Image (cartoon, rainbow, N blue to C red; front, side, top):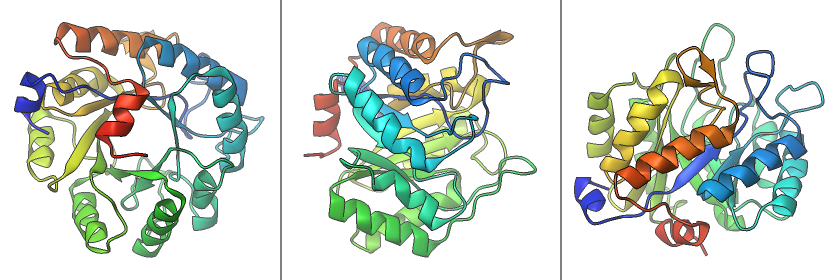
Length: 278
């Protein structure tokens, strides 16, 4: 979890976030929404080196729907070889909706776990409290699901330390640092460095940055010994004014950058070993 890790040829885990639960085809028609579409994108990204797929469910109208995660998981398992499935438990307003992400059959390998609420625009305000966080963390531990701890701002890092004290997490802790607008951490190299310096011991970090910040800040993450998330959930453009053609287009570019940095991408088995997953 340092520049020395980069110098020591530590492998980089690449996560693709294909869909999200906010924007739809009206913003970029190439965004996958239905299970078969999502699975097709995930399979292409696995072939390019993605080890983890972070997925959301959408209903037939393209609206966020956690109950569709089972169908998404089934479609991915049918089309893919061994990619790690990470279901969302975020974005929904109630605990009952969030918890659907960890009650698929079989359980997902991983699941996201928001470390608090956030505000993103005038109408996207999540409701999420410590009771919800502990409840989700407890069930993830019981079901053998590795949590990815979603840190949307500096205050959420305090909540990571609080959750560690409960004993509901197992090392290494996997922390996703998120940079963007609203109440996300302001996107800058300085803020990346600050958060990385303050991470708990025995943790691995991943970096997510929205829009035009995705490319530079995820590259910085690799140099700091961290991991990378890209995809159309976080960024709908390949470059300014040019909509992304697919998730694979974004993954392919990142894989090339990792190669140019003389790093290796982690396979799904490598990722399981790095993250302490059975």
